[in-house]
Image (cartoon, rainbow, N blue to C red):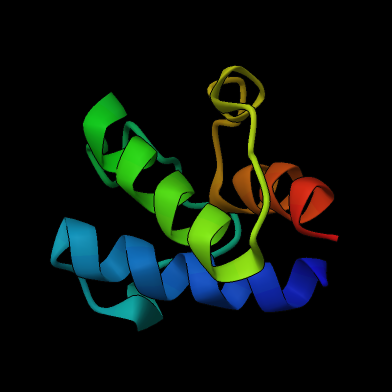
Amino acid sequence: MEQEVLEKLKTKLATISEKNVATISDNTKLKEDLNLASLEMSKIISEFEEEYDTFIKYTELMHATTVSEAAKVIAKFCE
């Protein structure tokens, strides 16, 4: 599940940050490298919640600094 979420997250992040998905790695920093704001992360959370019919605690996701850390948090709620 985590790998599936990771790949979907990279695609969503590439779209929002207007970057090529190939440039987004597991270690890409959400704020420093992608300049993501809270609103953009909320949008991504909403998309995963809708797709997996779940609720994701935003406060837990806010502690994630990299793409892989964010995917782990999201995957935990999507299982």
